[in-house]
Every structure is written in C-alpha cells, then in structure tokens.
Length: 68
Image (cartoon, rainbow, N blue to C red; front, side, top):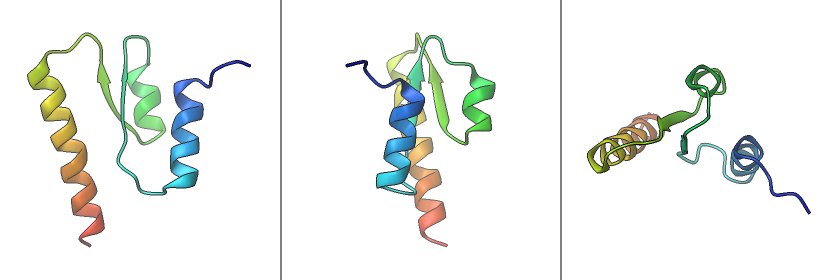
C-alpha cells in the first residue's frame, strides 16, 4: 500500500481537525505551492532557531485566529 504524500496528509488533517495549525517541512516542496494551499512552510535544511521561530509563528497565527 503506498504511503500518502504530504499534501494528502495535510488534507486529512484539515478534514479531521479544521483550523489545526500545521507547519510543513520539506527539502523539495515549492514555497509558492505551500502559500497557494494556505499552509506554513519551512524549507530543509534549517537551523534549530529557525524551527523554533517557525513553530512560534504558526502557533501565534493560530491563537490570533481563534481569539477573534
């Protein structure tokens, strides 16, 4: 059985938990495609501080949306 790709996992998460914060991490993903699909993206390779900043940004954006 083939494994789902990242976009398929994203759609499953969005279906199961709408509004759940997601950060996609990839060395191959096109950043424009991530933006078009409305998902935060962190390209590989990255430093630890970049990961921390990206996670904080996603959680901050999620809190801002849910606090409205």
